[in-house]
Amino acid sequence: MRGHAVVTGGAGFVGSHLCDRLLARGMRVTCVDNLCTGTTGNIAHLTGKDFHFVEADVSRGLDVGGPVDLVMHLASPASPRDYDRLPVETLQTGAAGTNHALDLAEVTGARFVLASTSEVYGDPREHPQRESYWGNVNPVGPRSVYDEAKRYAEALTAAYRRTRGVNTGIARIFNTYGPRMRPGDGRAIPTFIKQILTGEPVTVAGAGTQTRSLCYVDDTVDGLLALADSDFPGPVNLGNPHELQIRHLVGEIQRLAGTTVPVRSIPAPVDDPQRRCPDIAVAQRELGWQPRVELHEGLRRTLEWFAAHLSLV
Image (cartoon, rainbow, N blue to C red; front, side):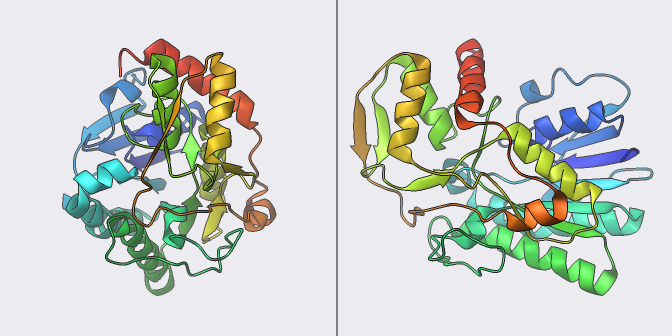
């Protein structure tokens, strides 16, 4: 696909990598971000006539002139620490922000891709999670602002497709990691890496037996682009089907870093999912997609980036 792509949340972790790849494809890219969690440092290298940055809050509108061929809606705080700090803003982005992004796709005839999340499954009772699973979500708990924002965004996206004919696709992204994560955003991998590289005790929630599926950012972006290139409506899981206990993740990072620091147990957050693992059969069948970067290689690249940038971020 060529033409003009609009990426909301494009100065964020995943969004900035997506901007890189769209530009490499020869597309003109407009990145829209209010920088509440994204940073201009993530996109500072993207200069030239084909890249345009707009600092704006998509929940207040999305004014992009000219033809648009692709709208990739990634705007939203995405870590518990961020959406705990910005609860109303998170809900507004999922509701009004998604509405404005869909309106832009409708007016321009663009393909629309929603970056939803595995959090729509809540603390799941089905393992692995299939797209047909409706989830186990606490609608008023501390995590609900993110979970329900994305669930509403999915419902709105599906309604625009059914009733207005907008060409939409929904991706449910599972835990993604890699360069450009913020060390202080509260998520497991950047927290563990920062602690290990600085010699601090590693803080693990509970016994560390809860599991996550960890997908390197290049693979996640591959999946988003495969969905953008298709007409598949989704939802489709994008994640690594290999389930890993958090305590084993800590051990792997320490091994790669060549150092050992103490591990300290802290209370688990409210409604923290105990297991998280995608069934990716739909992605394999409909998009020809599956993750390719092995965990040790992805962690090695991420560690190298943090070691080089930790004092700067």
